[in-house]
Image (cartoon, rainbow, N blue to C red):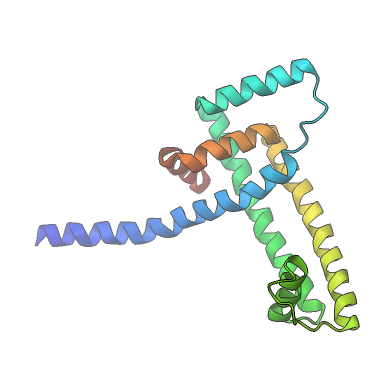
Length: 186
């Protein structure tokens, strides 16, 4: 009887923790966008800056993250996640307000990105113009979101490159994921 109760309690704990772990995994995936889009500002570094970056990369690859730095990361990560969610909602609103259904917009987008995927897709001139306007609005929204993400990271006292390094380490380390999750929840 006691064993059955313990199993029920463990199952309940797993069910309550699973959404939290899924959220963290989703956050890690979404936050990669920030790192990829903002981390490309490395060209033009001086030799001393290159040495600093090399040193930081070596430190990150060795997993040297202080508790304070991990807390800064968790704080920034939470803000980046919120900004990403708001951006996704804004994109959805932009598409809806344009008069496109999500499905039709997706079809046109896929045809634009990969013409072989839908070679016979018919797009009217009006749809094409409307689509271009929506894409421009989405790009503008994305630029604003990325700037806000960068600011959120820097406000927490991290450089975007260091944030990206920690993000990579957290992705690959379940123990760090748990620590970040706890920091986000507290």
